[in-house]
Every structure is written in C-alpha cells, then in structure tokens.
Length: 424
Image (cartoon, rainbow, N blue to C red; front, side, top):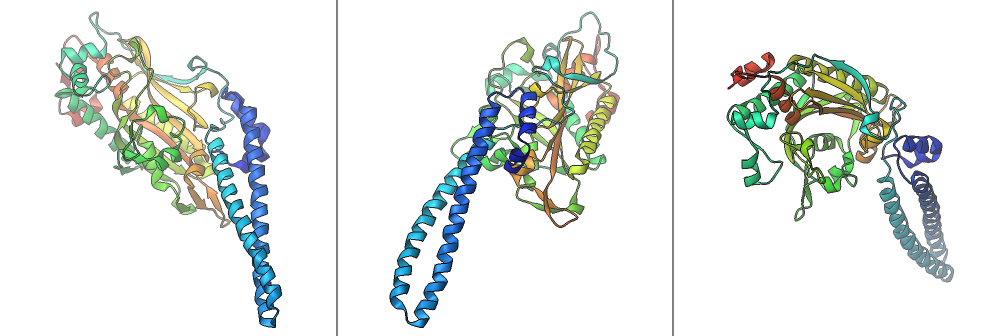
C-alpha cells in the first residue's frame, strides 16, 4: 500500500506510474484520496484541540475548587461535558474517515520501477535472456497429458471424480518425481542460504491484506466462510506475514526464507485448450523464496534471485527465457517482475514457471514491517519473493522435452532424488 505522504508529495510521479500500468480513473482516485486525507487531518486537529481544551479546563477546575470558587468550577464542568461529547463524535468521525481512506488506498496498485517497460499486454513484455536449445523430439512425441495417461503417472479423470477439474492425482513414478522436484528445489534454496519454513496452508483475512491478495484477488481465492479463513494461493502469503507488525534490527537484514506448500487458486474464467493438463490447476505444489531486505539492497537481491532460478533451470537442462514484465502485465503489488518461461516442445509454446518480484515498501507498509535504521529511526523494509519453482509446468516441460521412444528420461540432477532414471 502506498503511503499518503508519498502520494501527497509525489502526486505527479504516482500518476505517471499508474499511467504506465494503464490504471483507469487514476486521477479521480488520487484526488479523492488526497481530499479524504485532508478531511482526516482537519478532523484530527479539531479532536486534538477539543482534548487539549478539555485537559486545560480540568486543571483550571481543580484550581478553582481549591480556591473555593465552586460555582465557577461547576460552570466549567458543564463545558467539559460538552467537550467530551464533541470529542466522542469527532473520534467516531475520524475513525470512519480513516477507514474510508484505507479502503481507497487498498485500490491503488504499486508504482512501477523506472526499469519497467511500457506496454498493455503480455505481448509487450521484454525478453531479457534466453538459454538452452529446443530439443528435436521423435515423430510420435505427444503433450504431457497424453504421456501421463500412457505411463499412468498422473490421472486427471480420477482427480475430477474426487474433487473436480484442476485437481490431478499423481501416481507411482509421477508422485515420486513430484516429490523429487520439491526436495531438489528446497535443497537448492537451503544451499543458497534460505531458511526453510513449513507454514500453515490457510490464512486469516489480515494476512491476505498484508501481502496484497485482498481485496485485489478475493475472487481467485478459496474461502472457508464459517471461519473466515482463506486457502493460500502461494507460500508468499503466510511466510511474508511471519513479519507482520514486527520491528527488526538493521543487523537482522537480510532475511531469507523458503517454503514448500500446496497452492490453491480458483482460476475463475480459465477455459480452452491452453489450460489442458498441468498448464493451469486449482491445486498445485510450489516452492517459494521470500526475502526481507534493506531498501538500498533490494534490487541487488532481486538480481540474485533471478540468477538463483537460472541456476536451477540450467541444472534441469530445460530451454528457458526471462521476461521483464511491462506495466500493463504486472501484478498489483509488484514494482518490478521477471517471469521465467520454459519451452514445451510438444505443445510448441512457452510455459510460465516462475515470477520473481520486488515489492519495495508496498507490502511492508500494509504489514507494518519495519526496521530500526542506523539513525535510530523506524524505516519500512523491502519485501521480495519468487517461485523456486512452481511444479506443474516444470513437470510438463520435463515430461515433454525429455520424452523418447523408450520412455521419459529423468534429468541427471534429479536421479538421486527419484531413485530411477526413466519412466517407461
């Protein structure tokens, strides 16, 4: 969430940033926020003056009582009663205005970094890196959903029977390969200094607001209405919220965490051939990396996260590319995002498998996540996160790109985790 003083002092910068995002009605919303904040400040001043006057009168009443001027004291008591009533009304008014202001602020996305390219759609994203050769498959090569059926490793129909579409059942070597990928990703992250966390898979409303899923993506989250809890769409939510309402020491930074969790997304409105098989699911596994950084070092950390994900994909020997997302395709909370995509030779398309983002202070402001800087002042930290990695499309890429006439080979780096070198 943007801070009101920042909006007030950098209004034109905010409007330029929102224009880069192609955010509609930005000027009207920003003007409403500033007007609401002005009303809040005026009301706060009125309340402060009423409380100050009431306190002054209370002292004067005490002095009058001591000096025996009871009638004057009684007259002033009536005035203090009126001031208390006025203060009560002003407090209620101030709370309502503050709630309204926060609701308006929740509607404003993060301001893109100056590094973010202009653009409206995914076609405007900038390819910044590409690696690996696209393999030449045998003439009978097929997409992963046909391989899954052929080798009986993923059952989409059984998942549909148990729950519904988008909830696959992994079987035999398919389940073991899934577990191998999770363990491999966690081990790679731990070796890079990330501390493993096993968080809850459901969160409360405050956690959803803290990382920006609420109210922006409320319709995409599964909600347990009786308890008002949400199934997590990513481990980013519970892990980042570990630091909600926390005041860190500067020496605590950076904080590096990694977590494996299942993820749950309604993916409302997703239809068509492009969502077949593992391409888009309602439940999937993902390993996440989260960093809490000093503001002066967050972009250096972001580049380090990008290199870390590159290292994993290099070891898996999958052809991939990195995109810098344009303003119109970025997530609500991000200041800068890099997307990783692997090439599926059998589908002849790129599949997104990771997003690595810097949120700067946007999440930290919602979370009240601060650190005490070298001057002894409280300062908002920067938060970052990335998929390291999301499993469904990585698995799809592995199955399709490693298929042979004799079966599906296992990347060398995964064999110790799987206990086998081929699915046949």
